[in-house]
Image (cartoon, helix red, strand yellow):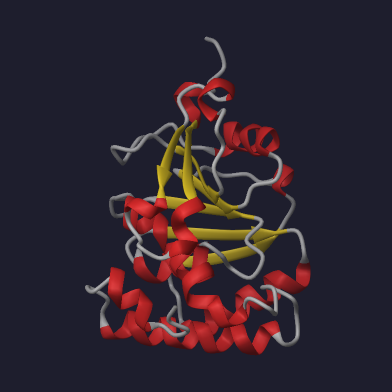
Length: 216
């Protein structure tokens, strides 16, 4: 396993020099901040690029998004998956939210340090959110029914992409997903990445505005 940013170039050979420098700097910032605030398991910090940054970028590897697509990263923690995605998807907009003040302060510092013009952040509880977004992104969603409830209120009905607007989250397999959530699809990450870590990882897509829309 590569402990540094070079693994990103393996799967994203089109990265610009600016993007490469931002990903390098991102790794440095996470190591500094993680020594002060527990953003990532300290046992896992040496696997930062593989298990956290590349994992976040899997959404951009597996799916295509048009210019101007808007993303909301709920429970962003230290900015994952939102910040890695925002560095790559420079023509898209990202809003990163978390209810924990110290984590949002870290996110704000990273955004400023990297000069990310397409990212905003906010300390707020998910149930207080307003506005409209094309997609909600998240990692290891714990309470999916609540996420769906939030998404119903803030997912835009204006469709920009071929992929229906909705929820995109990164987690392990959910064998009964099709039975419990009509319209949901799973994308297996081992189809895109050869590292063992990705064998049990998936992107789950729940199209909110038509699969979970209220009856007219």
